[in-house]
Figure (cartoon, rainbow, N blue to C red):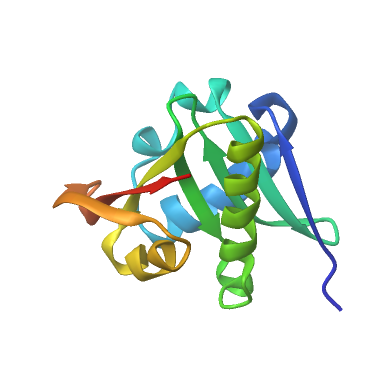
Length: 140
């Protein structure tokens, strides 16, 4: 039986769990270079982790510039609605902070997922770490 909880917190509070997920998804699965994955934004972003009982299974971060990034769900937990649960939580969190919009850089294959949450594509497609991306924005 799945028991899910979401925690929001600082990098200091959540980095161990967020790193586990991001290493699995971005570095191992998607072959993103270690130096491209970790940046100075982690220390000043809000982080979110979904736990299945005590196991961290999904993560994302919200930057000060209203950008959502590093959205990742472990392969074992994909297709179960975790990404949607996480994004809806972040959207609500951003509204409570009286942010007027959110933006993100979506991998092209994930655009329908973000579109289903109300995000609209902006600009042209571009490569980030060799993966096609497109900017998307959600106005409140």
